[in-house]
Every structure is written in structure tokens, then in C-alpha cells.
Image 1 (cartoon, rainbow, N blue to C red):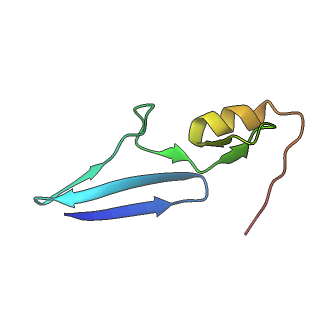
Image 2 (image 1 turned 120 degrees about the vertical axis):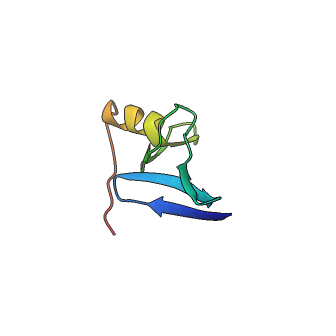
Length: 67
């Protein structure tokens, strides 16, 4: 079995190759891709993916970075 990870600038995903077939894993929401987003709450909780995207789009203050 081979595993591939795509850490994209917009979305990320994980797939594996086994028995001549590629399978993309689903996240906890049943989606094959996850938004490449990280958010920290005021309490220090780290959020990732769609939940983080939902939180930061409603936030009153945000910090954005580019590489």
C-alpha cells in the first residue's frame, strides 16, 4: 500500500493506492477534501478544516499569512 498526502493552498486530502486502485479518504464530515485552514480560539483551542473556516469567516479579528 502507498499513501499520498496533498497539502494544498486551498484544500488538502489523503489517498492510498492498493490493489491497483486509488482511494481518497473522507474526513469526519464525509468530504474527500478538507479546507487548508487553521484557527486558534481565544481559549487556545486549535481548530482545523471546515470548522476553522466557519469560525474565522465570522471572527471580528483575523490574521492571515502567506508563504
